[in-house]
Length: 246
Image 1 (cartoon, rainbow, N blue to C red):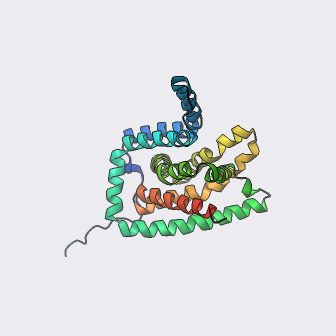
Image 2: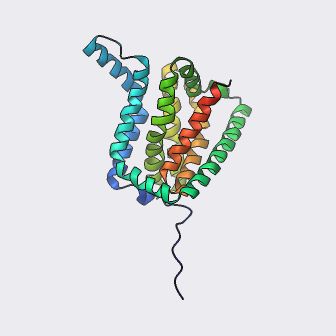
Image 3: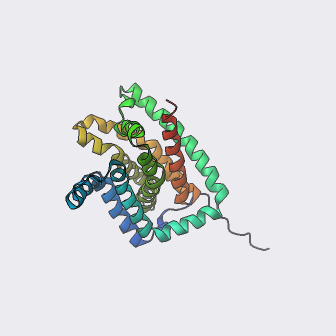
């Protein structure tokens, strides 16, 4: 009797998908992106004015830190991105279906989390990151689209899903989900809590549980981080697009 051909498992184990050097580089990028990038724009602005005696421009200033991280991620993870892109093409149907199901699951979980927060007395409309997006839409729309729909998704999915979640999940998936959510939520909320001196804003970190958990599951089940990158782009495009309809 001939042996049946091996099938690609539905759930891809994330551990071997990053090489050791990529993991180290990814964690360094995570620290830089999460804890340092909020101050990079200000430093670039001061340096530019000192060297050239003029303002760098608000749009360029907003996009430049994202662009720097984007280039750094492409350099550090070029082989990982190439491997994952081949996997995406090889399992295109599964990636598309997983992305569609993932989008529906993230949307449903977001409704549930927001409902729980409302019941708990939290003003979900006070999410500082979301309010910053509304403001950017009115004042700096091109920079918002470039950062949120083009540069940010690749940077954040490679850092938080491939590196943070992927490197921890091989040992403990529950811990991986918690750490993944903690840092992903932190990049969207913590800087505003410090900026406004209001620790109560930290409660809005909970709003990023659906995206963190949902994307990690999509990462595993699709077998390619590119599914997460494209899905992240689509989610942000839809979110920004709906602002114009409000």
